[in-house]
Length: 292
Image 1 (cartoon, rainbow, N blue to C red):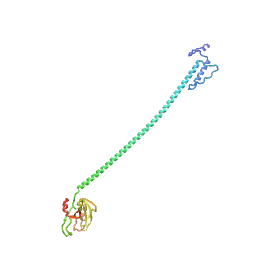
Image 2 (cartoon, one colour):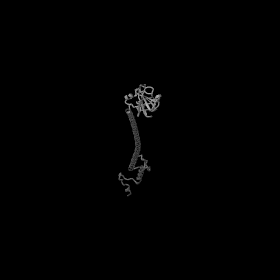
Image 3 (tube, helix red, strand yellow):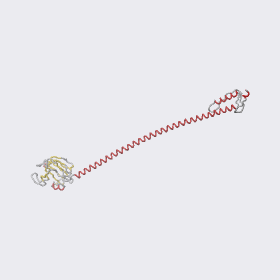
Image 4 (cartoon, rainbow, N blue to C red):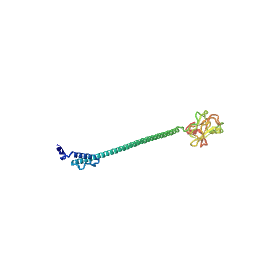
C-alpha cells in the first residue's frame, strides 16, 4: 500500500510524484522565491542539502513564482507611476485653477476699477456740462438784462421831451428888450415868476458850465447844449447841480428864489447863441417846440 501511494502519478506532469522529502524541499524553494523583492530579481534559493536537486516540476513552479512575482512588481510599479502621474496632474490642475482664479479676480478688480473710473468721468463730464449750461444761462440772462436796460434807456430817451419850459406854475412878468427902472438897460431875457422853491429845469440836454453867485443875477446856472447854445437861469434860491454835470431836458438845476437884483421870486431865463449872443427866448422856445 505504501509503495502504491509513493508511485502515484501527478495529474499535471504525468510523472511519478517524488517522495515526501523532495516535496518539502520544492515547497521551501517556492516559498523562498515568492519572498523576493518587487523588482523582479530572484532571491537566492534556500540552501539544500548536498546532493539534493530540483526536479522539473519544482523548477517549473519556481520559475512560475518568479515570473508572477516579477509581473506583480511590474504591476505595482505601473500602479505607483500611474498614481504619481495622477497626483502630479491633480497638483498641476490645482495650480492652474488657482492661477485662473487669481487671474479672474484680477480681471474682475480691473473691470470694477474701469467701471468706477468711467462713472467718475461721466459724473465729472455731467458736472462740467451743468456748470457750462449754468454759465451760459447766466451769460444769456446778463445779456438779456443789458439789452433790456439799453432798450429801456433808449425808450426813456425817446420818450423824454426834446425841450421843456424852465419852470411850471408860472406867469411871465418881463419880456426880452423891455425897458424899465428895474434894470440898467433893456431886459435881456424872459422872467418866469413862480412861488419860492418851485423847481427850475434845464430846457435842453447839455453840460453845466457855471453854478455860482453872479452879482445882479444872483445864484446863476448856465448850461451848454449840443449846438453850442448856452441857456442861463438866474435869481435862484439854491443850486441842485455842479459844474461838469450832464443834464437832460427837464433836469432840475435849482429852485425859484429872489437872489441878486429882483423884487419878487422868479427865474430870469436867457438864451445866448454860441455862448455870447443874447436872443429873444420866446421865439427860440417856439422854434424848438414849446410855447411860453
